[in-house]
Amino acid sequence: MQKKSFAIIGLGRFGLSVAKTLYDSGYEVVGIDSDPELIQDYAEQLTHTVQADATDELALKDLGIRNFDVVVVAIGQDIQASILTTLMLKELGVRYIVVKAQNERHGKVLYKIGADKVVFPERDMGVRVAHNLISPNILDFIELAQDYSIMEIMAPSFTEGKTLIELNFRARFGVNVMAIKSGNRVNVAPGGEDRIQKGDILVVIGHNDDIKKLEQAS
Ligand code: ATP
Image (cartoon, rainbow, N blue to C red):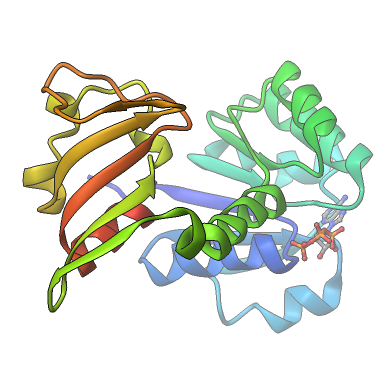
């Protein structure tokens, strides 16, 4: 099977990080930016780099942009350019468009005009950092033996709306869920059919590394 191809528009910190990670994972990645210096700087680090203004429809067409499996729009500051580019990519028939949004409103507009996925890296990273900072305070921690503990963790987003059977923590992460806290309620004997909700706290038992993996999974 042929590997997916990606075009990344905007080689700022975010775009470049996406582009390099994909390229280092063995994918075809074309980086597009209006800044000729960036194009030169990263020419060797991606499959190909192209200098172009992404709001120029002809330039996008010439690039054969619709032939890429995924196009990521990582233009941050210039919201108008980001929206215009997304609109044109949609009109040109790009199959899957991912766009970085500056704020919720920007994100709303992007979904309205047909973005398949909108990401908020700064907002999401802020939430992550905050959770990490408060974890030691809000989570109870009982050391059972060296490397084994009972810990309280925020239910990771991928667990939301799923039952314990569906999540299969034991097989996937090697940990057991002992209790689920939902607000003031605590389910101390959760069964397989019990469903995890957004904002729940899980009390899990297992190897510290496995619990960490679960906490960091998304
Ligand atoms: P980051 O936080 O990822 O560093 P940012 O959110 O501050 O970036 P910008 O620096 O505004 O975003 O834009 C990212 C990149 O997109 C820049 O390198 C810029 O040259 C490029 N860019 C902006 N507008 C266009 C455009 N119309 N066509 C092509 N590239 C563009």
